[in-house]
Amino acid sequence: MNYNPTQKNRFKESILNKNVFAITCELVPGRGSRSKVQDNLLAFAEKAAVRGQIQALSITENAGGHPALSPGILGKEILRLGIDPLLHLTCKDRNRNQLESCLFAHGREEMYNLLVMGGDYPRYGFKGIAKPVFDLDTVQLIKMVEEMTKGFEVEKDAPGGGARLPSIPFFKGCVVSPFKKLEAELMTQYFKLHKKIAAGADFVITQVGFDARKCDEVLRYIRQNNLNVPILGNVYIPSKTVAAVMHQGLVPGCVVSDKLMSMYKEESRLPDGGKKNQLNRAAKLLAILRGLGFDGIHIGGSQLTYEDIEFVLEKGEKFYPDWQQWVREFSFPLEGGFYYYELDHKTGLNTDVPVNRHQSIPRRSTGYHFNRLVHKTVFDEKGWLYRSTMTICRKISGTSLERLFTQLEYLIKFIGFECRMCGDCTLSETAFLCPQSQCAKYLLNGPCGGSRDGWCEVYPGVKRCIYVQAYERLKSFGEEKSLKENIIPPRNWSLNRKSSWINYFMGKGR
Image (cartoon, rainbow, N blue to C red):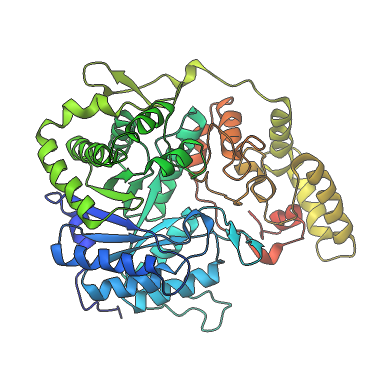
């Protein structure tokens, strides 16, 4: 038995139709149930529905980590106006059970288009900074949604266990950021994209950036690696104030280079504050993305009217036949930034030849090398201590010695890895860096999009992103591609504060 939607999914049809250049536009709800912000968004949506140029309106979920009106509520009103909502679904504020409940609600309301993301780290809320959740990461959440599209099977131990729930025809997208400075940041973005698509992502939207060569790069990478999903390019139109905030790295994942920021400062002296230049620049970027072969664009920006969007779309149509001539106007790279492909000097874009990433091999860490040897000796089935350790762990399991053994394991792993006693250890899969203690978002399947120059989004200048570190460690052994190969399942909280070693040898852990 399946749900029977009362209307077609026009956004899905447009993005899958190679003859249509799909247009989505982002709306950012404000705080409060009824406010001028929400009224303005609905007025914008009403115009979009009537004029028919936009296939879907993307609705953010607590953008910037701040509380706001739920995208599901606004989406319901937008759907009634006659245009498809594209709801953001993030991991930051809800555990897996609440996410499942939210998905059931979206399915019942026939809001099937989702943009699945980790989400910005929670910030100001009631009486202070909110607690981050991140029970699932983006890859795990996409996999969960994919199972719901096929017909969700209830766990055997749960009430009603073994039953298969009706399928819900979700159409789910994900995000990738090609606008990264370091090789380790960029490659882990691409490796995670492999996992997202393997988990079931149906389309991709790029993060905010203004480098035509990077736009070409991500499209070329997707094609060369046969990832075979539609991709929308991001056309963001920031005001000078927003551009300045992005330039400082205060909007996670969004990149405004020094060169582009200087241009914004100069344009701000114009009578209109540079707005016409900003809209023309957006139209040129639209033309470039269409010329490169993107399947559509995702438009966003601050203080935009629907008439501004119309101007960009109409100008973009005029610029499109000569899109190549605008490419060099969009050369706003991060200084010293890494590119996956060799430069095509003729076009200003890329060739099909990847750069030689093996010209620079990180030095092997003594500690990491030691941990690899210990793990192979004890936990690899061919290791010479594997059988004896398994025998000891199985004999201790369930006895009075188990607690003492667990405390000993915790002491060793706390000193070495800042262990959090999750009982479901992933150290060997993340280059012996603990995501539970060293990643602010507890991510198991790759980085978020918020790192900047290799630093963690939440602790810039203090903590390096653990996946940047993991990539470098693995690359020193020629094993960096392992970061894209296996989807790590969510943490099993029933094993919390138990021995991961005993769980492993008892077949309970990873």
